[in-house]
Amino acid sequence: MNIAVFASGKGTNFQAIIKAVQKGKIKARLTLLVCDNPDAFAIKRAQKADIKVALVKRDDFVSRRDFENKITGYLKESKIELIVLAGFMRMFSPEFAREYKGRVINIHPSLLPSFKGIHGIKDAFDYGVKITGVTVHFVDEQMDHGEIISQAPVKIEERDTLQTLELKIHKLEHRLYPDVIRLFVEGKLSQTRQAYLPYLITKKDPSAPFGRSG
Ligand code: GAR
Image (cartoon, rainbow, N blue to C red; front, side, top):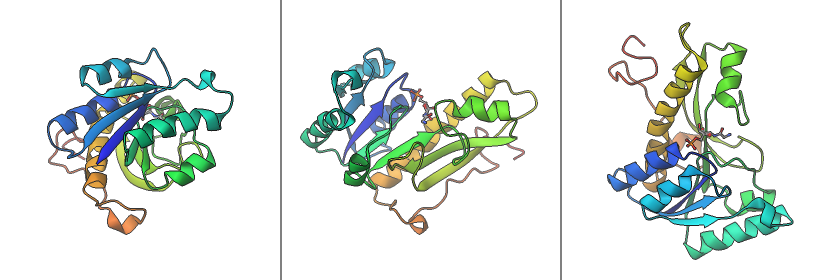
């Protein structure tokens, strides 16, 4: 299976996926990085891992459809079967969402439907929730929306700062996302909830968000 990752920024999730593919945990080809930001560090990560980069800037196109058609061209050329959004800060048109329905997944750093948008971690922290987390979901034309595939919780402790919370969330993302991608590649995910066993966090796992005492 050929996978494309879409990223606009640092690409730490992209890196976690690269690692999982290189280690053989995900048995697929990471064929393409689609990026809309020429300054994104994700591009350097792709180059280092010898992954083709499609840099497609929104400003270079009059309409969103033209922008998406350019992307679709790259996807077809590389015979992409799964699109993995990893910090790609754009929404798709209904046409794009329809064409790739069930083949686009996204990760978001909160327990959706709470705290959508680009500041999911900060918004949850500022609100004062006691539990937040990470969500992986199928993508539709709405922002941070679509059928939820998996969620994992993160407890916000009294001593947490925004920075420590960000660290916990990102660490969890880097475990959860490769796991979900592996399940997709192995054909164990579908649009039906019943087909997927939830991500389990056990007390025995010291790196689990709730720790040993969880
Ligand atoms: C991740 O935390 C991801 O959950 C978030 O962007 C970050 C990208 O980080 N996505 C969203 O907020 C989507 N609404 P990365 O570039 O280091 O992988």
